[in-house]
Image (cartoon, rainbow, N blue to C red; front, side, top):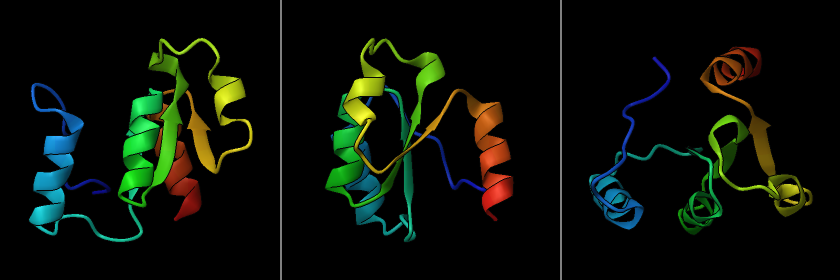
Length: 88
């Protein structure tokens, strides 16, 4: 209902994004969900809003890194579902 697909390994994010953007499967506004700084950088590269899922991150200083950034911060998929319902 909310997502066209969930993408991941073994392809790199660059390959996945190039393929997805090439097929014009990204509808704006778009969100990119991730748990790393690399994910954040990928979201910025394609001009998508970033949702940081801290419940799965290995990034110990994520609070400091995202303090002054325009990032939606959630713990897990259940919280994301509640956020989506509240935002729609």
